[in-house]
Image (cartoon, each protein chain N blue to C red):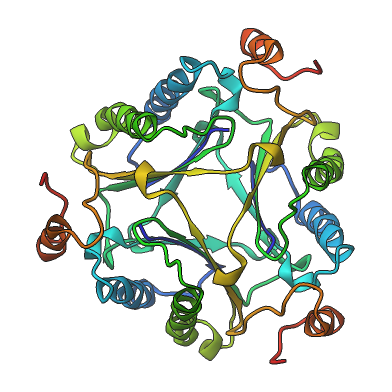
Amino acid sequence: MPLWNIYHPVGTYTARQKLEFAAEVTEFYVQRGLPKFYVVTLFHEIPESSFLVGAEPSTTTVRIVIEHIARHAKDPAARKQTAEILNRLLAPHTLDRGLHCEFHIDETPRDLWMIDGLWPPPTGSEAEQLWVRENRPFPY
Amino acid sequence: MPLWNIYHPVGTYTARQKLEFAAEVTEFYVQRGLPKFYVVTLFHEIPESSFLVGAEPSTTTVRIVIEHIARHAKDPAARKQTAEILNRLLAPHTLDRGLHCEFHIDETPRDLWMIDGLWPPPTGSEAEQLWVRENRPFPY
Amino acid sequence: MPLWNIYHPVGTYTARQKLEFAAEVTEFYVQRGLPKFYVVTLFHEIPESSFLVGAEPSTTTVRIVIEHIARHAKDPAARKQTAEILNRLLAPHTLDRGLHCEFHIDETPRDLWMIDGLWPPPTGSEAEQLWVRENRPFPY
């Protein structure tokens, strides 16, 4: 968690731009107390004829699917804020470059999630902080 | 919303067939009051050795994952009807061509979804109708 | 149902290894009473520059997204057990080969799911057992 699947036109991002994009995504979650390695960002290049927006082939749309597992905001204001902060984070990589951008977040069950054979430690636990500090999973 | 991820064997659809497929998918949602550009259809070609159905490589299966965000049917009859209409829509692109077809719909939270830096207008609102008419997102 | 999307580095699995991997995944569900053909396993090769873990390009991570539709465990102990059994199943294909492995399971609505134009039979029904025996969907 979180998992980001980024569907984008062919050639939209160089290797360096993917790195920078993923670094900002990662930083968002690190600031909220999650270990760096929790954040997986996958880029998927979609050919024009396979990327239909409103039934028209698109070379200018980035469609992002985000899955949150470790943390689920409950408060409506907090949920709104999460989306708006991610929206601002995305702008330089999409809107500001003349690309359309749609994203949505799904929330999946925390108790059906494992990393490297281990149960991720409970939210806010000491073990979670250790995983943050060492940036790797280990038995706790 | 909706997002359709269509996983299909190599060469199943020509560019023109993808267009026609996506046009029918889009029409389904337009008839239910959604803007055209909400409908994103992504086609993913999967090589035979990577497409396992019941642990056997398949070149005859289309697997479709649909995510609904803007509208969630609550009434069981309405939910059944939605699936059955989509099922009929899919037949000419799959079953009638001798292809197997499995699809499922997931429903994700409407309040964690943004397009081009904007919150999509509430269901049935005047702003939503404006987005439908102009087929683009703009501040309201 | 179940749908497994396996995102892995380029060249991680040969065609034979994918077969063996999918066979074990399929066996897990068959032992729980599901027809073989319900189990769809898709392998996706992700280039190093598109596979970012904690914002670093990875060639050693397998990220698995599992969707459960036909069966949803309710009891916390049963849920834990499901994940732990899958975890053990995954080890020879990931951890034991020196690869990192993260997986999570999402649960999507059973009533928005169809195969080959048919509603999958109810859990534990005689029709479901017939589908198991014949390993194909047919009207019931």
